[in-house]
Length: 264
Image (cartoon, rainbow, N blue to C red; front, top):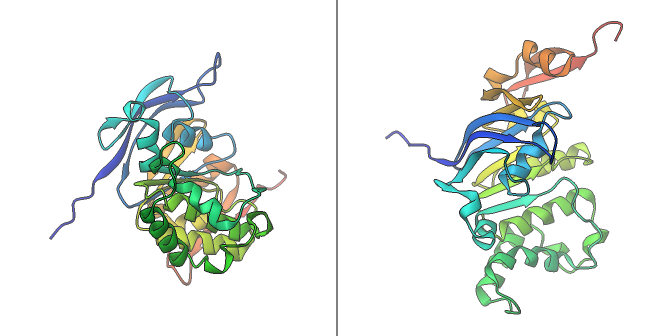
């Protein structure tokens, strides 16, 4: 029996510009499939973070429309939107004077009302996520004392207790060493929800993303699977570097080595 894949979010004719400036994003059109991982890639300044900010409603569009399950995202209440979309930012505060459990508990805020205490259901959800992400040994530790990789796992846990339909991550592997990069990407790949993630590392994107959305100068350069998108010609066009494309011995996906052009 063929499984019908469902679009969870649709982006139509999206354009965005800072106030009184020309557009940084130009006529962006694509759909996001439910329970798939969409990797957004591109050179610095291509518009990756700006696009994410439009998707999670930090930026009002200059033109176009974004719908979630067919509803304009700006017609959804902030509380309901936070129940459906969780965000992990590239630069998140790391000096919380809180324990790991207290940071994770913050993810239940969209389900609580002013001055209302956490419910038994909240505690059950938090306990399960802590167990699933193997964070039990950290729950009573000060968040600020954790390593970068450990903090990222806590941010993922905080997002997951929101029980979102979509998780948006902006460069979650930034500043992490190789092991923690792989651990975070492996964790993300097992969550079973819709993921939108910006990445600089094309090799990680090829391994873990179902689809690649490649931005270049504020426009879509390509949108397809990694095998179709990542070609030497496309990499040359976007980054002005030479590339040698091979295969990953463990994952059997395209992988890359890069070099500068001679005399550059």
